[in-house]
Image 1 (cartoon, each protein chain N blue to C red):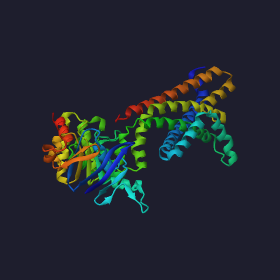
Image 2: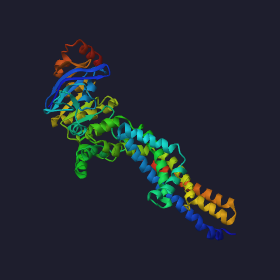
Image 3: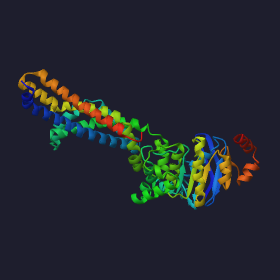
Image 4: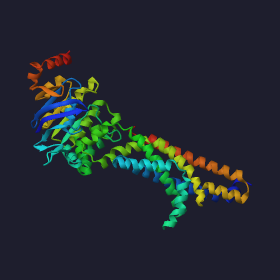
Length: 216
Length: 252
């Protein structure tokens, strides 16, 4: 079978898988970084109880497999009247878990900010929210770019778990093709290469954005 | 004017300021000198409340700053929002410049007016450009702090403090971290401020510069003002034995 014929038969299946994987990973990574920033803000601004709450949250998600919140949201939310589409449930679970990790990454980077900058911010009469938004967050995000890249790669690979709730992402497509054709090695090798492509692309984006920061 | 009465500050059990009384008149330049650890920097930081203090009063144009004593006689910190408003009447320049590294020179200067004082973006930028031109950095508006020399960074820091249109400028050893050949450009900027009749309080080891620009010099030892007077009196006819020794050391 020539490549053109192979691509005509199986191409759309892989393309669908690639699109779902890329789209959920992109949405979940964006959401997780935003959620991580919110958790950091709570930790820094809401006093002792805020910090304790965030600690508890982080422990909860760090010590449980991500498949658990995926199942929980997908199967339990309809029972409380929230029958969301599978992809929304899956992305939400990834956001909740990766947001926990990302808030810890960002927290580590706060220490990279020279304390004297906070003296300067206070001397300018900046309110806490403006100090967070204009001074802390921009620096913390930039210092965290390499670690955020790693976390995004992990998140990208974890989207394969969404096959468990019937999302037709790459891993699911490979499984379906194997069942149809009986040729297990072919589908899984192709899918592995496609993951490699996505991960490499992610790394290139993060590395380029780190290099693009002019003030460092 | 600034009135300081009975200011006391301790770090733990160690008394750093033991009752400071000092008045600074409008347009006056006061230099604080003394050995390291004598409390001069702490005094400066207490004035704009970067440090808390345990006793004493500071007034700016008659308004009591930082603490209020209630009807019950209990001394309480002023509310954060009010403290921020008060602080905007003062500018401080630090030894290590303390610029925000992720912002351009212009953004550093514009930040305070724009986000603390609610000045419009356009107006704040015009003010920033004017001040940067004044400190001789009109060509560096879009540079980042790391791309500048220490002297240039310190001039940005002065422009940033001036952008708040402060009544008083506090200068904390602003030339101590600079290479010797860069000291002059920063001192020139300070000289140019004298015609503004803004209050200046400077902590310095540069006794020569203090003599030149200060109306009065306070020698601080062990957290108290040991000698206070015109530069000629304090530097040429010192009475305090500690001050005599101090001057011998800084001059040799």
